[in-house]
Every structure is written in structure tokens, then in C-alpha cells.
Image (tube, rainbow, N blue to C red; front, side, top):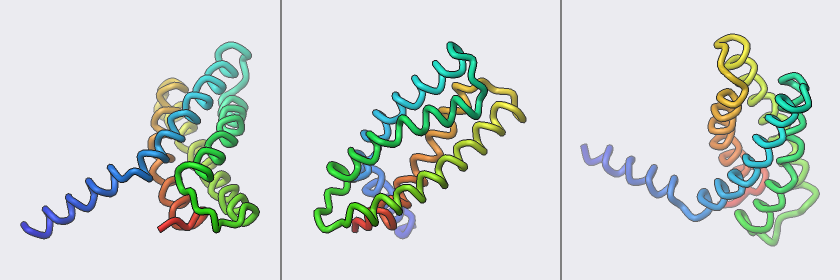
Length: 140
């Protein structure tokens, strides 16, 4: 019983840490760009799901990296080139991870692109934070 209380406390501290809150603030701004772009591309410009997802993802990446590099992880010792390369690898993973989720939710389960995007964004946010923290930005 004591162990569970301590474990829950760790999870609460982790989820409410200033760094993860900053990461999710960066993600929120990127999410707005992603959703607006992908939905406009799909519903207004009649691009398919793959094209809409790709355009939204690409346009949301730049503000997300800049926000995290300068604000969330703030490590002045980071080498920009190496960090960018690692971040790019995480983006490739995240893009494919999100695409797989969007594909399954829209084509297999027949939900809307908006619903699929929200599910994919939420799942990708936690994965992206973990990989960014322990690998790309190596923040402790």
C-alpha cells in the first residue's frame, strides 16, 4: 500500500513538472497549427488523408522544435546540429506513428479525420516528450 502511494506521487510530480508543462504548451501551439492545416487541406482543398496529415505535420514541426530548444529544455550545452538530427529522427518516428493511428481510426474504425487526429496527437505527445527528454535534448 505504501509503495502504490509513493508510485502515484512520482507520476503526479512527473506529469505536473514545469518541463512537461512547457513541452505540452509547445505541443498545444503546434497542435493548433497541425489541426488547422490538416483539416483545411482535407476539407477545403480536397487533399487526401495522407497529404493532409503530411502538410499539417510538416508545418507544425518548426515552431515545436524552436519552442522546445529555447524554452522547454533550455540546455545551452546542446549541439544544435546533433540535437536537430536526433529531433528529426523522432519526427520521422512520430510522423509514421501518427499516420498509422490516423489510418486505423479513419479507414478501419470509420471515425472522422478530426477524431483520428486528436487520438494520434495525444498518443504521440507522450511518446515525443519521452524521446525528446532522454535522447534528442538529453535533459535530466
